[in-house]
Length: 349
Ligand code: ASP
Image 1 (cartoon, protein in one colour):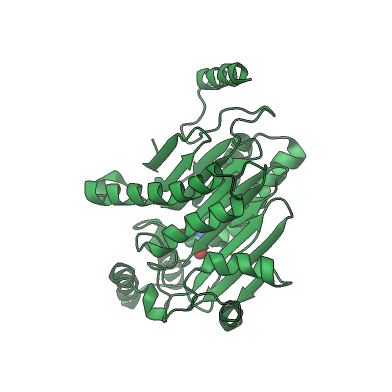
Image 2 (cartoon, protein in one colour):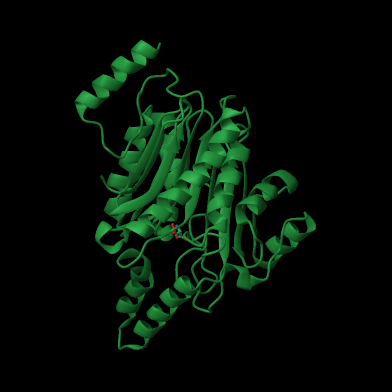
């Protein structure tokens, strides 16, 4: 079988497969018995704006995070645990827009969203607009395992987390100077004479043209063939009116189905909601028999791009094929296959 995989890989390489995919085969043969793939946000991430130190810092954190999940999978643990523990490393890091380091709302607060899905049972959990739960991804999974609901929001979600014994922190825990400065920059620009459309553009501009999204996500396949996916974020800088993005929405920010694939998204959330990005990838595989690569390419490069949306996904199918797909300049990302091969990348190359 290994020889077959090798021949298929060689064939795909000769066909010139996209550099953004680590997918090896479109066949039903298992490429990897277990595997894990993560992102730390997509956006205008350009080498010229990065110092070598910053770049090394991001890469080291991505590597640290993915190895936590990889160890769980290698030792026969579940994809669910791998996803949660991996995301928690990134939630604790101020580098990413999730947990500590989350972006600020227009009111100067941090409001966190997260979701989790289990591909075996199609069960899911999510929280939105939460201000004091230390690990939003853990709370999201607990909504799935410990309540009869799928999504809880605001104070109710905090009360639920508290009752279930999850760690509650003072909102100042999420503060970082860097993210607060981003908010101040946007507020300053808001004071200038702008018409309505300019202001609308600027709300997104903060993250699209000058920055990056920074949301974190993970998809894993375990040795039992179960896929799990999770996404955690602070949303978009300067958001207001209780705005909720795609990250906590099952089918947009996160989706997992053992029959097809698991997906975690990052990008301009409004477009990901309208496009149902994560579910569309799974649906294209289920109903049109597309490979993971074909489905992710169509949804991100064709459909999302045509609508004007920006961002990307990490995805992994039931056979352990993996795909990074994005239409921005970069996406913090990493993958590990069952042989322990590690890929860590930031830019398009
Ligand atoms: N998708 C997130 C949102 O719109 C932002 C991100 O990916 O960083 O809330």
